Image (tube, rainbow, N blue to C red; front, side, top):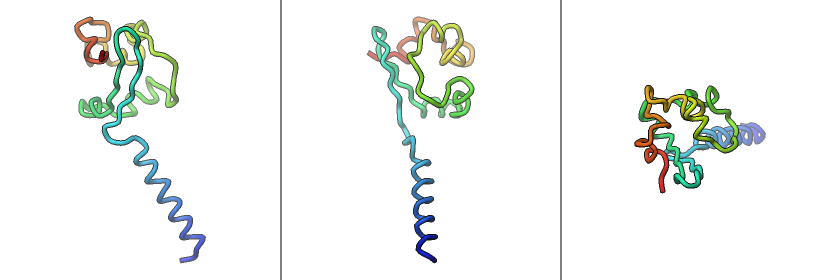
Length: 104
């Protein structure tokens, strides 16, 4: 194998492995939410319920980091409220369900 071919194979292998492990298993994303407490999104919890990444990305959420989320939007069945509407998943507007997302 020529050196240039070997370098290309090593580079592509590293690139593909990096893409596969870009989001580690069990990774969470934390959002600060002020008074009600932070929200920790756990992709595994959603995957265990049958959700796929593409169910939300790019249909509901863009693939870039966005601005702050607002409960008013969620309660209007936007953002997380698209699914967390009390029918498909627990409701964002039901006070008894707040602690399912917001952690003190």
